[in-house]
Image 1: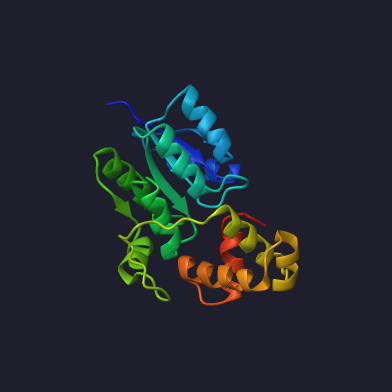
Image 2: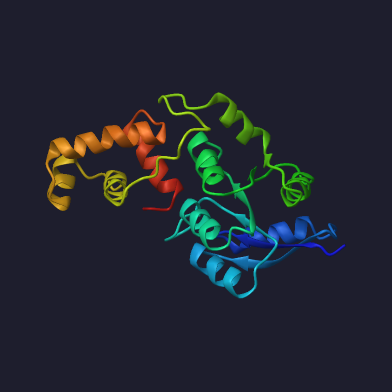
Length: 213
């Protein structure tokens, strides 16, 4: 049987090299293809579709969640596994709802990736124990459910969270975006609800995790 052709998408090429070295003795995995950005991933998939995309959440410019959405829209037949150090419920839930068939947390046991690939290629879903734990716990600070409708961020909300991460005050954000301070405060409250965080620090961490700053 031919090996599963996997496109590894990660900002660090070293991660790709590490995966290839770690699974060099796995004849059913072909990890030769690599892309460092979401845009590069889409170009490769259009030209030579792999069997499966192993996609990190934290990518520059087009982050992993946006890249997953674009991949699923353009190439719904291509399987995808999220592959990340992040294991918070919002990241796991977002990647699954955008079309990923599983979520593998980096630095897991060597045998997990081959198992996850086999499961997904057979039509199943694989979640690392840490990702499954996040799904089981659900949302701590909001009423959202992991199986509920995905509530994405608007372009304006992305602008605001990026400015918050850059340590701009409400007044500075108001002036930069030509909106009132009350509107900024409303957006910040809504963002905390959507992202399951309870403080500005949580918003900053989310922006950093998605490479928005």
